[in-house]
Amino acid sequence: MITNLLKATGILILSGFALFFHGRTFLESWSITYLFGIILAFLLLGFLYELFQEIKSIVKSREIKFEFSRHLLQGVALILGALAAYVISVDLKLGAVLASAAVGFLAGIIFPNFSVAAYCGSFVGMTSSLVFSQYWQVAVAALFSALVYILVLNIFTGFGGKLGTIAFVGSITAIFIFQCYFVTTPQQELSSGLIVLSIILSILSLLLTYWISVNLKKGPVIGSSLVSLLGVAAMAIIGTPQAGMLGTLIMAASFSGMVGSNRIKSVASLSLAGLFTAVAFLSSLCIFCGAGGKLGTIAFGSILGARGLEKLWCKAAGVLRRSGKKSFEE
Image (cartoon, rainbow, N blue to C red):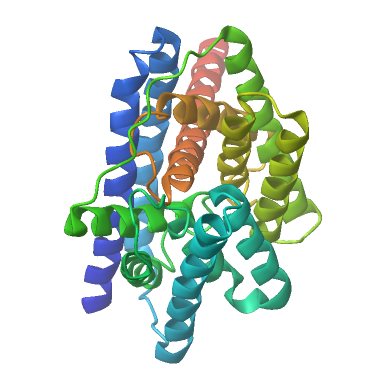
């Protein structure tokens, strides 16, 4: 009974924060272009459908088993990952994307058993120093994320962006408690060329991450962090005014690419998730700025949206086939 209550709490926390974020992004998108609003409307449709399906499967699943020592070590790894990323980003001035990717890649190589938790923590460490100016604020946000991480270990497994959403929950909770402020960012002019380039980069980054993770069997942490590092390097070499934004987009898409093959396999659905990631990213440029986990929350909603639409499409196609067969027989 208690574990069922904990599962329900985990579902409400993750889905609630993700739905709040994507609902706000959906409203923001209409001020940019109606096309973004229409695309994100489909994202929300798929998101809500997949959320309903996932809740049904979770309710029917077995009880959650907590292992105190293992979960405690994972919580510690998450907090250390957050602090390490914050130090690299702020003190070493290497930037949030490079900091998080470096922590994830090194953790995946050196501490593979705790790399997922450390990578999740690094997303908290991506929080801007204009939001959290003290290490202890980052640590507290990471602690909140660690509690959520343990709570949802067996919930929404295989969905890309889950770790980032966990970090977003911790970051937003700490921001609210400490009465911090988001970074103010003016709306950027988005040319048609930049939008098309963003979508292409998003889809390619997602597919590359998925290929490294699933096909090469390197795992989602190595896949995402490696693609993010390559993205940062490529954008640094190109050096265009939009290079920083595009490098961040590549990381967001790599989070979507962390999806498991048990969730999405087809290139078409993965590409749709890449489209959703790019549009949600561009639509949310001016909201929740500086909060850790924002990119992962974009990815989480995009993957759920693509998965939900895939199921709806298959369901509709099945109904049409049955109705067509019935008409033919008559």
